[in-house]
Length: 333
Image 1: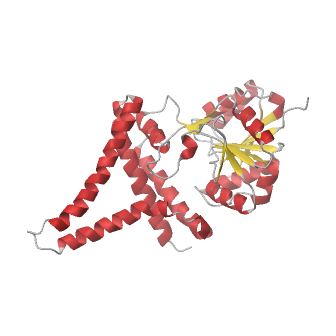
Image 2: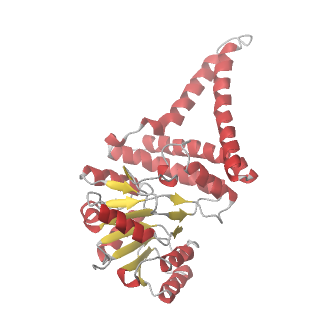
Image 3: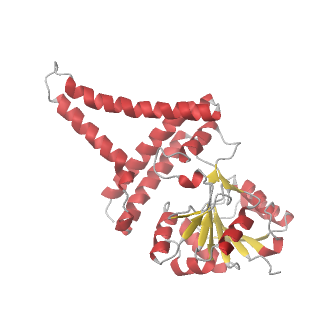
């Protein structure tokens, strides 16, 4: 019987994320032969957290390499691949928890689907997350923003156009021929998948290739994340015009329409109420949808805190992402 393929798990990190200990512990628990995988951490600098990660890997008899270089996440992945021994490269983040069957399921799907160069799966929110973070996970798993299908789960494997690098296993030759953008961040995984498919490759989503991914647990941190997503989405669209998706601009369009309607209403004599009713009604409908989302999340989770946070999460998503998108479009390339 042929041995399982050798897999290199490549993880970019700053070295300062406390969740990295949980990630390494989940690597130790993987249901995969110890001599058939390795862990490669690419950090900015040496830290006590990395030292503890080294100790955990040693205790679990996991082969570990730690490389220090303060470069962007995409370039760290490129350098990790360059020193990796595996024919398969498994990417994840330093704030994930891997399902014990993560590697075995991914390897099986790639073996059964030779026409695909990569496979990913859902990334769920850990149960121990704070209420705001859990609300973020709930909304990410919904269709209220765009297409966060990679958090929602599906019954059967299917072809997709993107897998996030918190949960992405690829054949080495595909990465070697495409590579990640060396400076783009965040959004470098989106841009990578665009070029991967332009090169003729196909990627797969499988519901049993599972990780848990810690979310932003504070509104300001989440706003900053969504703003950065928007900025780099604009940059990616400029780099690859064919990737333009009008749904990304829905909130900006709606906002401009509302401003125009309010401006028209402002020019009307005060006794004329009708011009004010239309934009006010549209605003009421939007915030009503946010409130409905809160009720839905509350009913699903039986958590008042998640029900309270869900509308805020949605608004931050729409506002932060769209503001970042607008700023990114206005910036000179």
